[in-house]
Length: 227
Ligand code: CA
Image (tube, rainbow, N blue to C red; front, side, top):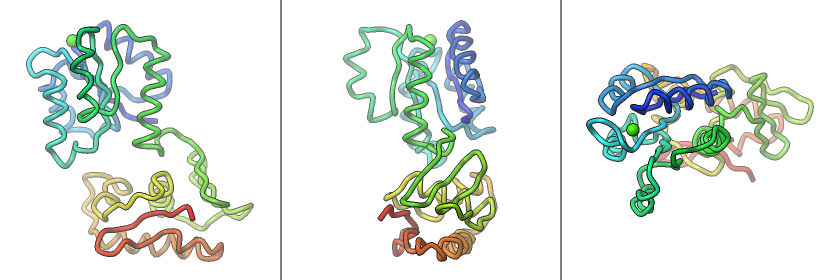
């Protein structure tokens, strides 16, 4: 489940969002303004931002734009919360800065559905879904990868790297991005460690002739290929 930062100045809305998302077992962090959100982001790495448009001080949209300028928050999934129907003409350009938006008033069900859709697209490993690529199956409940009825011999790092790549099949990731995803943003691990773990994943896949699915993309990084 995900850690979600809510940036919203109306306590009643904060409460509604908190109760709704905690029911889906997400962890909630709160901020009442863009300034406070910046402080929270310096101390934590949420998986998703629920951002109110109309905030005291800097607007939600200006804040979203500023987040796209920083490496650490450039990829952070954002759902914008908008209040008024008359904003709909401005919303047309919104997709460039945010992943999705919800308009107040929204039902708990709609909010859950949008959060789930964005997480599934941007951070599938947090949705707890079983992944399949051919005969290979990855189960996030047990942290096990299996092929047919055989379990692959993978340590926790190898499993996380494989899950990350299989969940984003076809996309290439550089070592820095993989370090963030597998070891965490504040890790001091060197980039060549990624190569070591990739080698171990390939060793575990080799008995099933799937080791060449984890492809090296020269001078870029790695990707998973479904075929
Ligand atoms: Ca507001």
